[in-house]
Length: 432
Image 1 (cartoon, helix red, strand yellow):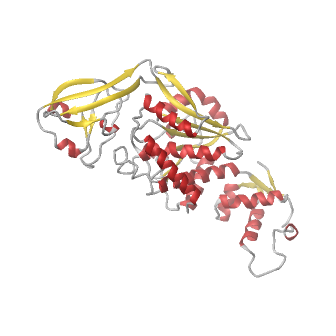
Image 2: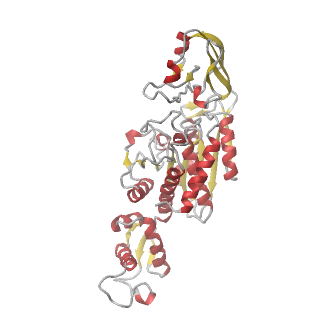
Image 3: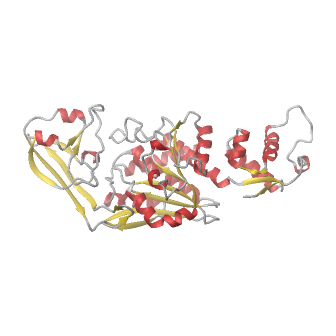
């Protein structure tokens, strides 16, 4: 059940996604800068960094910066049959400049459509091989008439440009960190792009609203090259301090919940994700590491081995609208965003409270004198009393919060207030 406050967060996230949707983002360029600048309105402490094109990052190098101003295809009758102004996906990402006359047969070699989704514009990129192209629906493509076309793409690839990313650090009581990563490199797609930054932004607001045990590091990066770049600069720190984390993507529709593990599969992040989803969405879809496809590939790579898992709604590659114009703001909804936000927030709440507890008395404590047990014996102990006693029964110094919750078949977040209460009465002690 989504409460009113969380549902309002979903409405607010959807409103911001609506504002960001028209911006043409890519691996680099002004669209990323504009997006991060708008996010900075909500997260004033978000630091924006530029990494020069050509700089080496492990086995990669930062590509030239791509910016596009206009692009169109003009038919034999002088009418524009494809126009970048109508939809960002109409141009192959990172297309090189072109301005020429071309016949339909040759043009077809530069066009991309999806016969199986005839109304959809596909999302196509060519980051590391220079080419140009246009994307259009299959219906549009079939309507093209023979003749001479004019094609124009006014864009540039600047080898002295840079890659832009945002980073936010929310200090906690400990220097140990929880790491959240999301990407800002896809043009005009809602689930595969904007849902992640929206949920990350509202999680940041929530985390900043109250003291936290862990520090939180949140990055807004271009996918793949951004995570590789970030790791190449911060790997030693991340390996030393990150205790848990999530890659935030595809988390805004209403169809399903999905879970993709870290490569290790048994990290604190994995345990928290599985526990939360088992209570919030028991029919959630479980994927294995062989189904990876986003930045978890880099964060969990051998030698990196960060504890990064993924809580998603409809997983990338697995829904028909993926990487098309159908992944829009009708597919992603306020309710879907609210549900995705709630699931990750619950996981972070569990990670925050996941201490190992030990009872401080031998045998059962006298609960009545502490006001924790009814002084009138009855056939049916009240639920709260039984839960307190169950917690104490398993508090042997060998069970953390997640293990207690699994033993008691109870959501961990429902145990937290009882554990805090018992600790306040001196009946539980934190042993790590």
